[in-house]
Amino acid sequence: MDVEFIRSGERTYHCIAYRHDGVCLRVSGAGRILPLPHDLVHFVIERELGLTGGFWGSVADGVLFGSITVVSGRQRPHAAERSRTLLRANAELLLQAEVVAGALDAIVAEGADANAQQALRRLNEAQSAVRIGRVPMDVVGLRRVCAVLREAADGWQKLPFDQPLALRWPEGGRERTRRSHRERRRQRASAAGAGAA
Image (tube, rainbow, N blue to C red; front, side, top):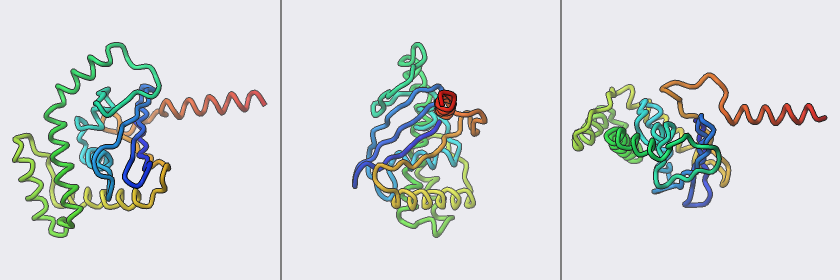
């Protein structure tokens, strides 16, 4: 799934997600925008840690949260029922992703990862407070995720308004090797235009 994060104003953003099934979604931005929008924090952390049952993995699989509208494309039959079923099935994983993203976002914002051992304890404490399984992480993993978050924040803050920050969500835990629906559509349009000339 390709996702574009678009900074539409000083304090506003939205996302456009192109699912592999050809459905295009608009995700209304929620929460703060700097140093990183909440949804972008989730994307980076969930992708880096392989949290496929979090917000973005659930979106890729067909969950339609309240902040999401279908822009184009044909949904599968019984899409609403499938969305509700997935939402129930992913409830604990969504909570886990929320807790981990919140804790790591705060750790980076406060510079608390300078002491990685202490930051790791803080992350583990946050996870134990909600009685869900812990995301396995060591000091090396924590430093890597924090560095990726800082890199994303730097890119976001330099992003001009209305310009997308394009990222790819791995399908099935790994990057899809076949071209996305959108890429194939562009190629067909380009080929049709060349054939008409």
